[in-house]
Image (cartoon, rainbow, N blue to C red; front, side, top):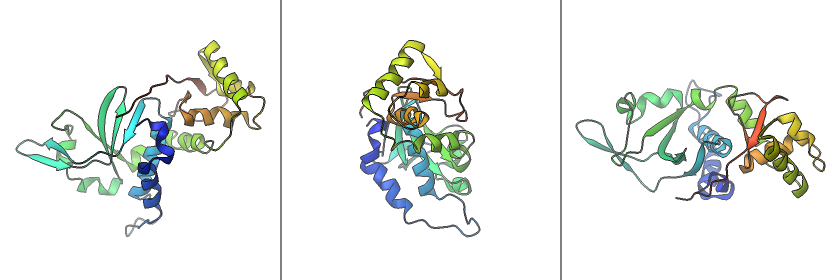
Length: 214
């Protein structure tokens, strides 16, 4: 399933529903829960240009850990740059208890060749990516008129890449031009570099449209 169809997909609703029943580990008050981190991961996938598709795996996969095969069901399956990966989302404190922790040192790979990636609190909440992702996602409800949408995309067609403030300057109907541009990033129409903070000079470019489904 395309990443940008996730807003109303059951896997996205599951993450949100679980987030409403949060439990706190003793001594970790204020620390993000696994449900918090799963929601962060889905949000990052929506605006990461390298992620083409995301879904919840159908069932467990077999991992060869040397002398035996171990069954494990990952949290997510993604397609990144055309290649499939399984992904687990684990708080930093729980990483030591991961069932494949030994294999992760050298790289855990399924029997059919899909690598297992592990996202932790440290990787998902790394700055400036985390703040940039949140700022972009906060613009998801911004309604961008058809005219502004076409003007932004046409400007990027002509320039290839343009500063955020320049793209915002072509907006005529939306009150907040920057929010209009970032709303298109959530839709998957433009790309904003998540590894940079949101600044006037933040580069924006058209996103290659990929119609991919599992």
